[in-house]
Length: 103
Image 1: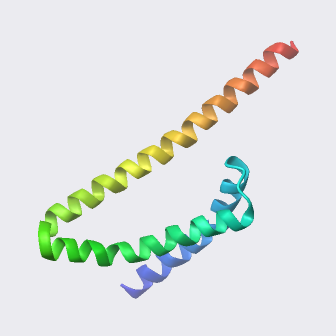
Image 2: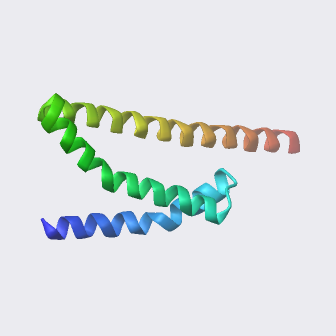
């Protein structure tokens, strides 16, 4: 169990420089603002289990809380995935139009 947590933490820390580059490149954010966004994201992801445990114990129950958390996680992933796919598609369309104008 401890090895799993250690490897998950190492993977998430390894993604931070890439995420900073992504925020600075795609969204044209400054280094300080990109770092602040990732810090707040990391802090909220570390605090969310405490809130989820309180909600599960007090109001919804274990299985409904897990289901809602999974659905929200899926929706966030879906929106981020669509954002990156649409950006890639627009970049490819611009690239193809530039090539066709060149010829």
